[in-house]
Image 1 (cartoon, rainbow, N blue to C red):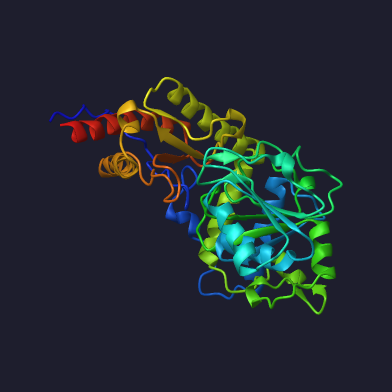
Image 2: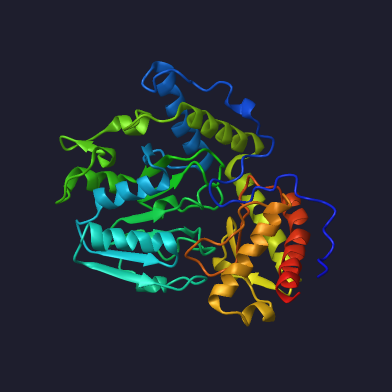
Amino acid sequence: MTLPAKPDTRPANPNFSSGPCSKRPGWTIEALAFSLTGRSHRSKPGKEKLKAVIDKTRDVLGIPEDYRIGIVPASDTGAVEMALWSFLGARGVDILAWESFGKGWVTDVSKQLKLDDVRTFTADYGELPDLGQVDFSRDVVFTWNGTTSGVRIPNGDWIPADREGLTIADSTSAVFAMDMPWDKLDVVTWSWQKVMGGEAAHGMVVLSPRAVERLLTYTPAWPLPKIFRMTKGNKLIEGIFRGETINTPSMIAVEDALDGLNWAASIGGLPKLIERTTANLAAIEAWVAETDWVDFLAADKAQRSPTSVCLKVVDPWFAGLDAEAQAKAAKRIVALLDAEDAAYDLGAYRDAPPGLRIWAGATIETADLEALFPWLDWACRAMKAEHQG
């Protein structure tokens, strides 16, 4: 068996994981030199750093001044759970799900909160459900960008300004890479570990004035754990939105979040972050267009995620394999790339169809993607040679 010749050049940064994602260009451990280690997060400088994360987040993203921004426990998952348990139950709920995490929110609302009036609209991986089915007199829960399917909502045109219910958007792989229509969104969540390449375990939640009003006028029928509580005595716990976190945060992670936000501001803010992300997707699109063994999982270009880019293998030989063999073949491509230090963590999500997932957010350099493409071609040929030889 003769394997194909290997490419001459490797990506300078082979980190293409979809979470935790690659650090910003030029990042070194020295970026954390001023971490407030050994100090309380409730000390004056500790609160100042946490408040700085909130303020810089507002500045970079252009979040309206009357929206609250809070740092919450347990990454994006914790932020979404906080929203589901705190806001839902006041009226009927419509949930959209077209990938793993959205389906998880369906389970939580239906089987954990056990709400009776729930409508679920689903689609297969690579597609969006019909957004026109949504009733905005109800609360609406959805993911803005399907991290495990590579499918995003293109815009907020489908959301009316005069909606009665709240819109709750899990936006963890969208914020900082896409324009978010804040006037159409009432609760938005994400984590530091995604687009900005920060450290894990901390989430962010943004609340519109309508969301705050719901908190002050509605009490869920179920008890709320401490880490989900945003009110006390029928009043908003304002400290959450000033950096007085519910539980103890990692001050190293806080420093890393500040570093990412400072980098974003230094290169031109949100427009530049979107520009970098868009350029990365364009590079992948150009490679896919001239490559016969791979295609996008998202069929509609307008719905194609520019961050978590999900690809399927369309080689006729691969299509002839059964599902188990396809999964093994796709994992072998990933293993070959890892062994060559050409690319790490490119495998599709465990619940998604067999294939590849390339993170292409703003912290990724286009030049590294261009260096990756020959390695992808090599790994596919090498995998086939192993199977056929």
